[in-house]
Length: 234
Length: 300
Image 1 (tube, chains in turn brown, cyan):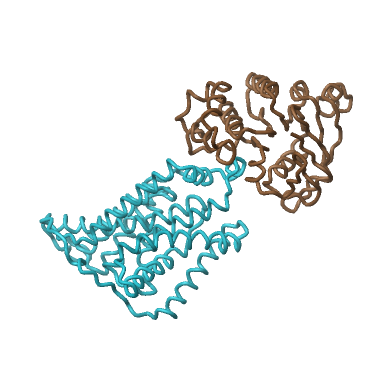
Image 2 (cartoon, chains in turn cyan, green):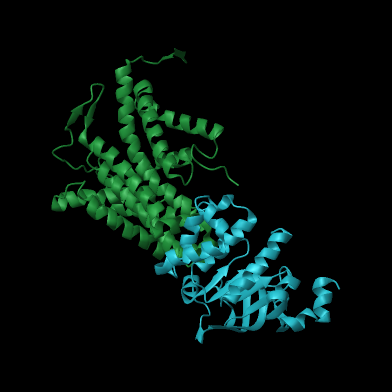
Protein backbone atom coordinates (compact mmCIF):
# COMPACT_ATOMS: atom_id res chain seq x y z
CA UNK A 1 0.00 0.00 0.00
CA UNK A 2 1.26 3.46 -0.90
CA UNK A 3 -0.62 6.69 -1.27
CA UNK A 4 0.99 9.60 -3.02
CA UNK A 5 -0.48 13.07 -3.28
CA UNK A 6 1.22 15.25 -5.89
CA UNK A 7 0.80 18.99 -6.32
CA UNK A 8 -2.80 18.84 -5.19
CA UNK A 9 -4.81 22.02 -5.65
CA UNK A 10 -8.31 21.98 -4.26
CA UNK A 11 -11.14 24.31 -3.38
CA UNK A 12 -14.02 24.28 -0.93
CA UNK A 13 -16.85 25.82 -2.94
CA UNK A 14 -15.40 28.96 -4.53
CA UNK A 15 -12.61 29.27 -1.95
CA UNK A 16 -9.21 27.89 -2.87
CA UNK A 17 -8.00 25.89 0.09
CA UNK A 18 -5.06 23.73 -0.99
CA UNK A 19 -2.21 25.18 -3.04
CA UNK A 20 -0.07 22.30 -4.19
CA UNK A 21 0.16 19.65 -1.49
CA UNK A 22 2.73 16.84 -1.79
CA UNK A 23 2.71 13.92 0.59
CA UNK A 24 3.18 10.19 0.78
CA UNK A 25 2.07 7.35 3.04
CA UNK A 26 3.75 3.94 2.89
CA UNK A 27 2.68 0.48 4.01
CA UNK A 28 2.45 0.08 7.77
CA UNK A 29 3.06 3.72 8.65
CA UNK A 30 1.16 6.13 10.82
CA UNK A 31 1.48 9.46 9.10
CA UNK A 32 0.10 12.46 10.95
CA UNK A 33 -1.32 15.53 9.25
CA UNK A 34 -1.20 18.43 11.65
CA UNK A 35 -2.49 21.94 11.37
CA UNK A 36 -4.90 24.38 12.92
CA UNK A 37 -8.57 24.77 12.16
CA UNK A 38 -9.15 25.88 8.59
CA UNK A 39 -5.68 24.88 7.38
CA UNK A 40 -7.29 22.57 4.82
CA UNK A 41 -6.94 19.20 6.53
CA UNK A 42 -10.48 17.98 5.96
CA UNK A 43 -10.49 19.35 2.41
CA UNK A 44 -7.44 17.21 1.70
CA UNK A 45 -9.14 14.12 3.18
CA UNK A 46 -12.29 14.63 1.26
CA UNK A 47 -10.39 15.04 -1.98
CA UNK A 48 -8.61 11.76 -1.31
CA UNK A 49 -11.92 10.07 -0.42
CA UNK A 50 -13.64 11.30 -3.56
CA UNK A 51 -16.19 13.51 -1.79
CA UNK A 52 -14.72 16.51 -3.65
CA UNK A 53 -12.89 16.61 -6.98
CA UNK A 54 -9.47 18.28 -7.01
CA UNK A 55 -8.83 21.33 -9.22
CA UNK A 56 -5.52 19.87 -10.32
CA UNK A 57 -2.79 17.53 -9.17
CA UNK A 58 -2.75 13.79 -8.76
CA UNK A 59 -3.65 11.25 -6.10
CA UNK A 60 -2.04 7.87 -6.68
CA UNK A 61 -2.94 4.74 -4.73
CA UNK A 62 -0.86 1.60 -5.28
CA UNK A 63 0.40 2.99 -8.56
CA UNK A 64 -3.07 3.81 -9.90
CA UNK A 65 -4.43 7.34 -10.23
CA UNK A 66 -7.58 7.76 -8.15
CA UNK A 67 -7.90 11.50 -8.81
CA UNK A 68 -11.55 12.41 -9.22
CA UNK A 69 -12.90 8.90 -8.64
CA UNK A 70 -16.31 8.86 -6.91
CA UNK A 71 -16.28 7.99 -3.21
CA UNK A 72 -17.71 4.48 -3.66
CA UNK A 73 -14.82 3.56 -5.97
CA UNK A 74 -12.28 4.92 -3.50
CA UNK A 75 -13.90 2.85 -0.74
CA UNK A 76 -13.85 -0.20 -3.00
CA UNK A 77 -10.08 0.20 -3.41
CA UNK A 78 -9.63 0.18 0.36
CA UNK A 79 -9.15 3.82 1.39
CA UNK A 80 -11.57 4.22 4.26
CA UNK A 81 -12.15 7.53 5.99
CA UNK A 82 -13.50 7.88 9.52
CA UNK A 83 -14.72 11.45 9.23
CA UNK A 84 -14.58 14.39 11.56
CA UNK A 85 -17.76 14.48 13.63
CA UNK A 86 -18.08 10.66 13.28
CA UNK A 87 -21.03 10.81 10.92
CA UNK A 88 -22.55 7.60 12.25
CA UNK A 89 -26.12 6.86 11.15
CA UNK A 90 -28.02 8.23 14.15
CA UNK A 91 -31.38 6.65 13.22
CA UNK A 92 -29.94 3.15 13.03
CA UNK A 93 -28.75 0.63 15.57
CA UNK A 94 -25.08 0.08 16.39
CA UNK A 95 -25.22 -3.30 14.66
CA UNK A 96 -26.79 -1.81 11.52
CA UNK A 97 -24.12 0.88 11.44
CA UNK A 98 -21.42 -1.78 11.58
CA UNK A 99 -23.14 -3.82 8.88
CA UNK A 100 -23.23 -0.82 6.58
CA UNK A 101 -19.49 -0.46 7.10
CA UNK A 102 -19.25 -3.56 4.93
CA UNK A 103 -21.69 -2.26 2.32
CA UNK A 104 -19.12 -1.83 -0.45
CA UNK A 105 -16.05 -3.70 0.74
CA UNK A 106 -15.59 -6.78 2.91
CA UNK A 107 -19.19 -7.75 2.18
CA UNK A 108 -18.55 -11.49 2.17
CA UNK A 109 -16.61 -11.48 5.42
CA UNK A 110 -18.95 -9.35 7.47
CA UNK A 111 -19.41 -11.90 10.25
CA UNK A 112 -15.69 -12.50 10.77
CA UNK A 113 -14.96 -8.76 10.61
CA UNK A 114 -17.73 -8.06 13.10
CA UNK A 115 -16.25 -10.59 15.50
CA UNK A 116 -12.83 -9.00 15.22
CA UNK A 117 -14.20 -5.49 15.79
CA UNK A 118 -16.16 -6.60 18.82
CA UNK A 119 -12.94 -7.97 20.29
CA UNK A 120 -11.33 -4.53 19.79
CA UNK A 121 -14.38 -2.62 21.08
CA UNK A 122 -16.21 -4.91 23.50
CA UNK A 123 -18.36 -1.97 24.62
CA UNK A 124 -20.03 -1.83 21.20
CA UNK A 125 -21.44 -5.33 21.55
CA UNK A 126 -23.22 -4.33 24.74
CA UNK A 127 -25.00 -1.66 22.73
CA UNK A 128 -25.72 -3.53 19.50
CA UNK A 129 -29.42 -2.70 19.52
CA UNK A 130 -29.13 0.88 20.74
CA UNK A 131 -29.60 3.71 18.22
CA UNK A 132 -26.22 5.21 17.30
CA UNK A 133 -27.56 8.71 17.87
CA UNK A 134 -28.03 7.96 21.57
CA UNK A 135 -24.40 6.90 22.19
CA UNK A 136 -21.91 9.12 24.00
CA UNK A 137 -19.26 10.94 21.97
CA UNK A 138 -16.58 8.39 22.82
CA UNK A 139 -18.81 5.47 21.94
CA UNK A 140 -19.77 7.13 18.66
CA UNK A 141 -16.09 7.53 17.83
CA UNK A 142 -15.51 3.84 18.52
CA UNK A 143 -18.49 2.98 16.36
CA UNK A 144 -17.21 5.18 13.54
CA UNK A 145 -13.81 3.47 13.67
CA UNK A 146 -15.47 0.06 13.94
CA UNK A 147 -17.63 0.88 10.93
CA UNK A 148 -14.47 1.86 9.04
CA UNK A 149 -12.73 -1.41 9.99
CA UNK A 150 -15.68 -3.42 8.63
CA UNK A 151 -14.51 -2.36 5.16
CA UNK A 152 -11.11 -4.05 5.64
CA UNK A 153 -9.16 -0.84 5.01
CA UNK A 154 -5.77 -0.86 3.33
CA UNK A 155 -5.42 2.74 4.45
CA UNK A 156 -7.49 4.15 7.30
CA UNK A 157 -7.91 7.92 7.36
CA UNK A 158 -8.85 9.19 10.81
CA UNK A 159 -10.07 12.79 10.80
CA UNK A 160 -9.84 14.35 14.27
CA UNK A 161 -10.63 11.18 16.21
CA UNK A 162 -9.88 12.88 19.53
CA UNK A 163 -12.17 15.85 18.95
CA UNK A 164 -14.70 16.37 21.72
CA UNK A 165 -13.46 13.49 23.88
CA UNK A 166 -12.47 13.77 27.53
CA UNK A 167 -8.68 13.74 28.21
CA UNK A 168 -8.87 10.18 29.50
CA UNK A 169 -10.69 9.01 26.39
CA UNK A 170 -8.25 10.90 24.17
CA UNK A 171 -5.43 8.91 25.76
CA UNK A 172 -7.36 5.68 25.16
CA UNK A 173 -8.06 6.64 21.54
CA UNK A 174 -4.38 7.26 20.75
CA UNK A 175 -3.42 3.94 22.36
CA UNK A 176 -6.00 2.23 20.23
CA UNK A 177 -4.73 3.86 17.03
CA UNK A 178 -1.18 2.75 17.86
CA UNK A 179 -2.49 -0.77 18.52
CA UNK A 180 -4.36 -0.94 15.18
CA UNK A 181 -1.16 0.15 13.47
CA UNK A 182 0.83 -2.56 15.26
CA UNK A 183 -1.55 -5.10 13.79
CA UNK A 184 -0.40 -3.92 10.36
CA UNK A 185 -2.89 -1.19 9.41
CA UNK A 186 -1.58 1.89 7.57
CA UNK A 187 -3.05 5.02 9.11
CA UNK A 188 -3.33 8.63 8.01
CA UNK A 189 -4.04 10.54 11.20
CA UNK A 190 -5.42 14.05 10.82
CA UNK A 191 -5.24 15.89 14.11
CA UNK A 192 -5.02 19.17 15.94
CA UNK A 193 -3.65 17.34 18.93
CA UNK A 194 0.01 17.81 17.99
CA UNK A 195 1.99 16.22 20.83
CA UNK A 196 -0.04 13.05 21.21
CA UNK A 197 -0.16 12.55 17.45
CA UNK A 198 3.61 12.90 17.13
CA UNK A 199 4.11 10.40 19.94
CA UNK A 200 2.46 7.59 17.98
CA UNK A 201 3.25 8.69 14.40
CA UNK A 202 6.19 7.64 12.25
CA UNK A 203 6.17 10.77 10.14
CA UNK A 204 4.17 13.97 10.01
CA UNK A 205 3.23 16.84 7.74
CA UNK A 206 2.23 20.22 9.09
CA UNK A 207 0.01 22.25 6.81
CA UNK A 208 -0.60 25.98 7.06
CA UNK A 209 -2.74 28.03 4.69
CA UNK A 210 -3.05 25.16 2.27
CA UNK A 211 0.63 24.31 1.84
CA UNK A 212 2.97 21.91 3.60
CA UNK A 213 4.90 24.12 6.03
CA UNK A 214 6.92 21.36 7.73
CA UNK A 215 7.45 17.67 7.26
CA UNK A 216 9.71 14.97 8.57
CA UNK A 217 9.94 12.11 11.00
CA UNK A 218 7.87 12.47 14.12
CA UNK A 219 10.99 12.34 16.31
CA UNK A 220 12.53 15.30 14.49
CA UNK A 221 9.37 17.34 14.47
CA UNK A 222 8.73 16.84 18.15
CA UNK A 223 11.91 18.83 18.84
CA UNK A 224 11.41 21.38 16.07
CA UNK A 225 11.57 24.84 17.67
CA UNK A 226 9.22 26.42 15.15
CA UNK A 227 6.59 23.74 15.66
CA UNK A 228 6.89 23.99 19.43
CA UNK A 229 6.46 27.74 19.25
CA UNK A 230 3.50 27.72 16.87
CA UNK A 231 1.50 24.84 18.26
CA UNK A 232 2.54 24.44 21.85
CA UNK A 233 3.38 28.03 22.75
CA UNK A 234 6.74 26.83 24.13
CA UNK B 1 -77.29 21.19 17.23
CA UNK B 2 -77.69 24.67 15.77
CA UNK B 3 -74.79 25.79 13.70
CA UNK B 4 -75.38 28.95 11.63
CA UNK B 5 -78.97 27.84 11.12
CA UNK B 6 -77.63 24.61 9.76
CA UNK B 7 -78.93 21.40 11.14
CA UNK B 8 -76.66 18.41 11.24
CA UNK B 9 -78.59 15.33 10.31
CA UNK B 10 -78.64 12.60 12.89
CA UNK B 11 -77.87 9.05 11.89
CA UNK B 12 -78.03 5.70 13.59
CA UNK B 13 -74.75 4.11 14.66
CA UNK B 14 -74.86 1.57 11.85
CA UNK B 15 -74.87 4.31 9.20
CA UNK B 16 -71.99 6.07 10.94
CA UNK B 17 -70.05 2.83 11.27
CA UNK B 18 -70.70 1.98 7.63
CA UNK B 19 -69.40 5.38 6.61
CA UNK B 20 -66.29 4.97 8.74
CA UNK B 21 -65.62 1.56 7.19
CA UNK B 22 -65.80 2.95 3.68
CA UNK B 23 -63.43 5.66 4.96
CA UNK B 24 -60.92 2.97 5.89
CA UNK B 25 -60.99 1.63 2.33
CA UNK B 26 -60.57 5.10 0.83
CA UNK B 27 -57.87 5.91 3.36
CA UNK B 28 -55.84 2.88 2.40
CA UNK B 29 -55.39 4.34 -1.10
CA UNK B 30 -54.42 7.71 0.35
CA UNK B 31 -51.89 5.90 2.50
CA UNK B 32 -50.35 4.13 -0.47
CA UNK B 33 -50.01 7.35 -2.47
CA UNK B 34 -48.64 9.10 0.61
CA UNK B 35 -46.15 6.28 1.23
CA UNK B 36 -44.23 7.06 -1.96
CA UNK B 37 -44.37 10.76 -1.21
CA UNK B 38 -43.12 10.36 2.35
CA UNK B 39 -40.27 8.05 1.27
CA UNK B 40 -39.08 10.54 -1.35
CA UNK B 41 -39.36 13.37 1.16
CA UNK B 42 -37.62 11.44 3.92
CA UNK B 43 -34.58 10.56 1.81
CA UNK B 44 -34.24 13.25 -0.84
CA UNK B 45 -35.73 15.99 1.37
CA UNK B 46 -37.86 17.21 -1.49
CA UNK B 47 -41.57 17.38 -2.12
CA UNK B 48 -42.31 15.59 -5.34
CA UNK B 49 -44.80 17.76 -7.18
CA UNK B 50 -44.91 15.24 -10.03
CA UNK B 51 -46.44 12.57 -7.77
CA UNK B 52 -50.01 13.24 -8.90
CA UNK B 53 -49.08 13.34 -12.58
CA UNK B 54 -47.24 10.04 -12.18
CA UNK B 55 -50.29 8.49 -10.51
CA UNK B 56 -52.41 9.66 -13.44
CA UNK B 57 -49.91 8.29 -15.94
CA UNK B 58 -49.88 4.92 -14.16
CA UNK B 59 -53.70 4.87 -14.20
CA UNK B 60 -53.63 5.40 -17.97
CA UNK B 61 -51.10 2.60 -18.27
CA UNK B 62 -53.44 0.27 -16.37
CA UNK B 63 -56.38 1.44 -18.45
CA UNK B 64 -54.65 0.90 -21.79
CA UNK B 65 -53.31 -2.49 -20.74
CA UNK B 66 -56.92 -3.46 -20.10
CA UNK B 67 -58.31 -1.84 -23.25
CA UNK B 68 -55.64 -3.08 -25.66
CA UNK B 69 -54.79 -6.48 -24.22
CA UNK B 70 -57.65 -7.21 -21.87
CA UNK B 71 -55.31 -7.39 -18.90
CA UNK B 72 -57.15 -7.25 -15.59
CA UNK B 73 -56.26 -4.05 -13.66
CA UNK B 74 -55.01 -6.04 -10.65
CA UNK B 75 -52.91 -8.30 -12.83
CA UNK B 76 -51.53 -5.17 -14.51
CA UNK B 77 -49.73 -4.47 -11.23
CA UNK B 78 -47.15 -7.06 -12.28
CA UNK B 79 -46.31 -4.78 -15.21
CA UNK B 80 -46.90 -1.24 -13.94
CA UNK B 81 -45.14 -1.64 -10.59
CA UNK B 82 -41.77 -2.74 -12.05
CA UNK B 83 -42.36 -0.32 -14.95
CA UNK B 84 -43.04 2.50 -12.49
CA UNK B 85 -39.85 1.68 -10.60
CA UNK B 86 -37.72 1.81 -13.74
CA UNK B 87 -39.45 4.99 -14.94
CA UNK B 88 -38.94 6.68 -11.56
CA UNK B 89 -35.33 5.53 -11.33
CA UNK B 90 -34.49 6.92 -14.77
CA UNK B 91 -36.47 10.12 -14.15
CA UNK B 92 -34.46 10.87 -11.00
CA UNK B 93 -31.09 9.71 -12.33
CA UNK B 94 -31.44 11.16 -15.81
CA UNK B 95 -33.52 14.30 -15.34
CA UNK B 96 -34.27 15.49 -11.80
CA UNK B 97 -30.85 14.77 -10.29
CA UNK B 98 -28.97 16.12 -13.29
CA UNK B 99 -31.07 19.27 -13.66
CA UNK B 100 -31.02 20.20 -10.00
CA UNK B 101 -27.27 20.22 -9.28
CA UNK B 102 -28.01 19.12 -5.74
CA UNK B 103 -30.06 22.18 -4.82
CA UNK B 104 -33.37 21.37 -3.19
CA UNK B 105 -35.27 24.42 -4.42
CA UNK B 106 -34.37 23.55 -8.01
CA UNK B 107 -35.51 19.93 -7.55
CA UNK B 108 -38.87 21.28 -6.42
CA UNK B 109 -39.26 23.32 -9.59
CA UNK B 110 -38.03 20.48 -11.78
CA UNK B 111 -40.67 18.10 -10.36
CA UNK B 112 -43.31 20.82 -10.85
CA UNK B 113 -42.17 21.22 -14.46
CA UNK B 114 -42.34 17.46 -15.03
CA UNK B 115 -45.89 17.36 -13.69
CA UNK B 116 -46.96 20.13 -16.09
CA UNK B 117 -45.37 18.31 -19.03
CA UNK B 118 -46.96 14.96 -18.14
CA UNK B 119 -50.41 16.48 -17.61
CA UNK B 120 -50.41 18.43 -20.84
CA UNK B 121 -49.03 15.49 -22.76
CA UNK B 122 -51.88 13.41 -21.30
CA UNK B 123 -54.43 16.03 -22.38
CA UNK B 124 -52.92 16.13 -25.84
CA UNK B 125 -52.64 12.40 -26.42
CA UNK B 126 -55.51 11.02 -24.36
CA UNK B 127 -57.91 14.06 -24.37
CA UNK B 128 -59.91 15.14 -21.34
CA UNK B 129 -62.46 12.33 -21.79
CA UNK B 130 -63.04 10.18 -18.75
CA UNK B 131 -62.27 6.55 -19.38
CA UNK B 132 -63.33 3.69 -17.16
CA UNK B 133 -62.48 0.07 -16.99
CA UNK B 134 -65.35 -2.34 -16.67
CA UNK B 135 -64.49 -5.42 -14.70
CA UNK B 136 -67.09 -8.14 -14.17
CA UNK B 137 -66.66 -8.07 -10.40
CA UNK B 138 -66.67 -4.30 -9.75
CA UNK B 139 -70.02 -4.34 -7.96
CA UNK B 140 -69.65 -7.76 -6.35
CA UNK B 141 -69.00 -7.93 -2.69
CA UNK B 142 -70.56 -8.90 0.58
CA UNK B 143 -72.81 -7.36 3.17
CA UNK B 144 -71.21 -6.43 6.48
CA UNK B 145 -74.59 -5.56 7.93
CA UNK B 146 -73.75 -1.89 8.38
CA UNK B 147 -72.45 -1.44 4.88
CA UNK B 148 -71.94 -3.30 1.63
CA UNK B 149 -68.28 -3.90 0.81
CA UNK B 150 -67.32 -4.36 -2.82
CA UNK B 151 -64.29 -6.45 -3.70
CA UNK B 152 -62.31 -3.54 -5.23
CA UNK B 153 -62.50 -1.79 -1.84
CA UNK B 154 -61.25 -4.88 -0.09
CA UNK B 155 -58.44 -5.25 -2.64
CA UNK B 156 -57.41 -1.64 -2.02
CA UNK B 157 -57.17 -2.21 1.71
CA UNK B 158 -55.37 -5.54 1.44
CA UNK B 159 -53.04 -4.28 -1.28
CA UNK B 160 -52.09 -1.15 0.64
CA UNK B 161 -51.40 -3.01 3.87
CA UNK B 162 -49.37 -5.68 2.08
CA UNK B 163 -47.28 -3.15 0.15
CA UNK B 164 -46.61 -1.06 3.27
CA UNK B 165 -45.55 -4.20 5.12
CA UNK B 166 -43.27 -5.35 2.28
CA UNK B 167 -41.68 -1.93 2.02
CA UNK B 168 -41.08 -1.85 5.77
CA UNK B 169 -39.50 -5.31 5.59
CA UNK B 170 -37.31 -4.16 2.71
CA UNK B 171 -36.10 -1.15 4.69
CA UNK B 172 -35.26 -3.23 7.76
CA UNK B 173 -33.82 -6.38 6.22
CA UNK B 174 -31.98 -5.57 3.00
CA UNK B 175 -28.68 -3.80 2.44
CA UNK B 176 -30.31 -1.40 0.00
CA UNK B 177 -33.05 -0.62 2.53
CA UNK B 178 -30.44 0.08 5.19
CA UNK B 179 -28.50 2.24 2.75
CA UNK B 180 -31.69 4.23 2.08
CA UNK B 181 -32.14 4.84 5.82
CA UNK B 182 -28.49 5.81 6.13
CA UNK B 183 -28.70 8.30 3.25
CA UNK B 184 -31.87 9.79 4.74
CA UNK B 185 -30.04 10.99 7.85
CA UNK B 186 -26.34 11.12 7.03
CA UNK B 187 -25.36 11.56 3.39
CA UNK B 188 -21.67 12.21 4.01
CA UNK B 189 -21.34 9.19 6.29
CA UNK B 190 -23.14 7.14 3.64
CA UNK B 191 -20.70 8.21 0.94
CA UNK B 192 -17.79 7.24 3.17
CA UNK B 193 -18.99 3.64 3.56
CA UNK B 194 -19.19 3.47 -0.22
CA UNK B 195 -22.90 4.04 -0.75
CA UNK B 196 -23.57 5.60 -4.13
CA UNK B 197 -25.94 8.35 -3.00
CA UNK B 198 -27.18 9.23 -6.50
CA UNK B 199 -28.13 5.57 -7.02
CA UNK B 200 -29.97 5.46 -3.69
CA UNK B 201 -31.85 8.68 -4.52
CA UNK B 202 -32.96 7.13 -7.79
CA UNK B 203 -33.96 3.87 -6.07
CA UNK B 204 -36.14 5.87 -3.66
CA UNK B 205 -37.75 7.79 -6.46
CA UNK B 206 -38.31 4.50 -8.26
CA UNK B 207 -39.97 2.96 -5.18
CA UNK B 208 -42.12 6.08 -4.80
CA UNK B 209 -43.35 5.77 -8.37
CA UNK B 210 -43.82 2.00 -7.94
CA UNK B 211 -46.11 2.81 -4.98
CA UNK B 212 -48.27 5.16 -7.04
CA UNK B 213 -48.33 2.55 -9.80
CA UNK B 214 -49.67 0.01 -7.30
CA UNK B 215 -52.20 2.60 -6.13
CA UNK B 216 -53.20 3.14 -9.77
CA UNK B 217 -53.97 -0.57 -10.22
CA UNK B 218 -56.08 -0.54 -7.08
CA UNK B 219 -57.92 2.64 -8.14
CA UNK B 220 -58.75 1.92 -11.77
CA UNK B 221 -61.56 -0.59 -11.08
CA UNK B 222 -63.51 2.09 -9.18
CA UNK B 223 -62.29 5.46 -10.54
CA UNK B 224 -62.53 6.83 -14.07
CA UNK B 225 -59.23 8.01 -15.54
CA UNK B 226 -58.73 11.56 -16.82
CA UNK B 227 -55.72 13.91 -16.95
CA UNK B 228 -56.65 15.70 -13.71
CA UNK B 229 -57.27 12.62 -11.58
CA UNK B 230 -53.85 12.84 -9.90
CA UNK B 231 -54.76 16.03 -8.04
CA UNK B 232 -57.68 14.42 -6.31
CA UNK B 233 -55.42 11.98 -4.52
CA UNK B 234 -52.14 13.80 -4.28
CA UNK B 235 -53.41 16.95 -2.57
CA UNK B 236 -54.88 14.69 0.08
CA UNK B 237 -51.71 12.59 0.14
CA UNK B 238 -49.71 15.75 0.88
CA UNK B 239 -52.06 16.35 3.80
CA UNK B 240 -51.58 12.74 4.94
CA UNK B 241 -47.79 13.07 4.82
CA UNK B 242 -47.76 16.23 6.92
CA UNK B 243 -50.41 14.89 9.27
CA UNK B 244 -48.61 11.59 9.83
CA UNK B 245 -45.19 13.20 10.10
CA UNK B 246 -42.91 13.89 7.14
CA UNK B 247 -40.88 10.81 6.29
CA UNK B 248 -42.78 8.39 8.57
CA UNK B 249 -44.21 5.15 7.10
CA UNK B 250 -46.48 4.48 10.06
CA UNK B 251 -47.55 8.12 9.89
CA UNK B 252 -48.52 7.72 6.22
CA UNK B 253 -50.58 4.62 7.03
CA UNK B 254 -52.35 5.99 10.11
CA UNK B 255 -52.71 9.43 8.52
CA UNK B 256 -54.26 7.89 5.42
CA UNK B 257 -56.83 5.96 7.45
CA UNK B 258 -57.64 8.99 9.63
CA UNK B 259 -58.18 11.28 6.66
CA UNK B 260 -60.23 8.63 4.84
CA UNK B 261 -62.50 8.08 7.86
CA UNK B 262 -62.98 11.78 8.59
CA UNK B 263 -63.60 12.55 4.95
CA UNK B 264 -66.37 9.93 4.74
CA UNK B 265 -67.93 11.04 8.03
CA UNK B 266 -67.76 14.64 6.81
CA UNK B 267 -69.54 13.66 3.62
CA UNK B 268 -72.19 11.86 5.62
CA UNK B 269 -72.93 14.79 7.91
CA UNK B 270 -72.12 17.83 5.77
CA UNK B 271 -72.89 16.57 2.29
CA UNK B 272 -70.72 15.57 -0.65
CA UNK B 273 -69.12 18.94 -1.35
CA UNK B 274 -68.89 20.56 2.07
CA UNK B 275 -67.83 17.29 3.73
CA UNK B 276 -64.29 17.52 2.40
CA UNK B 277 -63.58 20.45 4.74
CA UNK B 278 -63.21 17.96 7.57
CA UNK B 279 -59.84 17.04 6.01
CA UNK B 280 -58.60 20.60 6.37
CA UNK B 281 -60.14 20.83 9.81
CA UNK B 282 -58.31 17.75 11.13
CA UNK B 283 -55.15 18.88 9.40
CA UNK B 284 -55.17 22.29 11.06
CA UNK B 285 -55.95 20.76 14.46
CA UNK B 286 -53.00 18.37 14.24
CA UNK B 287 -50.67 21.12 13.06
CA UNK B 288 -51.76 23.33 15.97
CA UNK B 289 -51.07 20.72 18.62
CA UNK B 290 -48.42 18.54 16.96
CA UNK B 291 -46.58 20.63 14.38
CA UNK B 292 -44.25 17.78 13.43
CA UNK B 293 -47.19 15.47 12.71
CA UNK B 294 -48.54 12.46 14.58
CA UNK B 295 -45.45 10.27 14.12
CA UNK B 296 -42.89 12.89 13.11
CA UNK B 297 -39.87 13.74 15.18
CA UNK B 298 -39.70 17.37 16.28
CA UNK B 299 -37.26 19.36 14.13
CA UNK B 300 -33.75 19.95 15.44
